[in-house]
Image 1 (tube, rainbow, N blue to C red):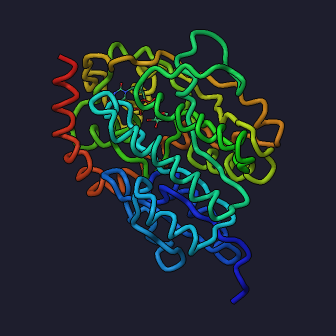
Image 2 (spheres, rainbow, N blue to C red; image 1 turned 60 degrees about the horizontal axis):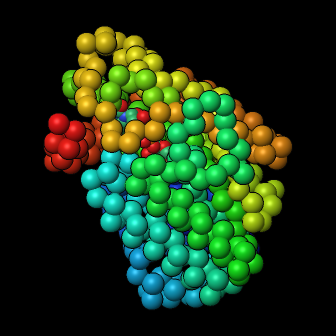
Image 3 (cartoon, rainbow, N blue to C red; image 1 turned 60 degrees about the vertical axis):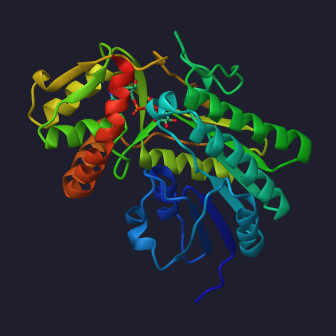
Length: 335
Ligand code: TDX
């Protein structure tokens, strides 16, 4: 077997985007190391066909000593930091896991990366750090105005990466994708949730009147963008990862209903999310200048997601049922 030339360490590699990224790597030339705490949202099922080819550590990034040990043993060349608590509704119920993983955890990953002399660090952030954008789009120089607890912890994480860049010449790049979706996304997020609800003859919970606007990006386009930025991006810089597909949540719900042969009677209008950002919109000219083109349409990715939920229905139904208790809390907090 040819020698592996690079060691790539992925935090949160059993999560939705982290696992898709791990699967996109060339396993004959790279050694892949995955760190994941396997919270409710992480699943080794996502890594099923990589099982024998990756080195996996069940590890919480908040535990510094054991984290540092892994870094010093594996000596990664590049670190992709995906690990995070990501669900806004959960952050509204309890911010603590978010400050722990997203802020303190990120600081630990930065520190272990500095200690082990990594060559490149790609930090996965979000468009939510800019807050709600009333008109037009914001580029990477816009001020951070996060408004929900999740977004606030992600903005703090970005600031910690920036601090390391400025103080330690830390070789990092920050990427800020919009709402990414596709197969293997945990069905608490709007699109897979709506699909499994309808397949299981339940209604789609729509917050408020469903007028909030989101920008939707396919998981494949997101992964390609991360690869391109990692290869051609400038260290110390921030890159937005945008999409041309923006629409309000009601339209997204209607499209899903139509595809599954259901009517609007299957929409359950529920109390709006607390501090619900009305609209996100990023300018991604900087990414386009690197040569990125969006290749996957919203419709095609939605079809792939519906096919995946249908094929993985037992898993998705199980996850949907696990959410019942947490939903009680969400709806309680709404009423
Ligand atoms: O049941 C629902 N009903 C509903 O109307 C859920 C779960 C969501 N919504 C609305 C809220 C949002 O306006 O749909 C929109 C999308 O919601 P989410 O899927 O929860 O995503 P969002 O809150 O927009 O944040 C996502 O994008 C940025 C991810 O959760 C973040 O992790 C990412 O950083």
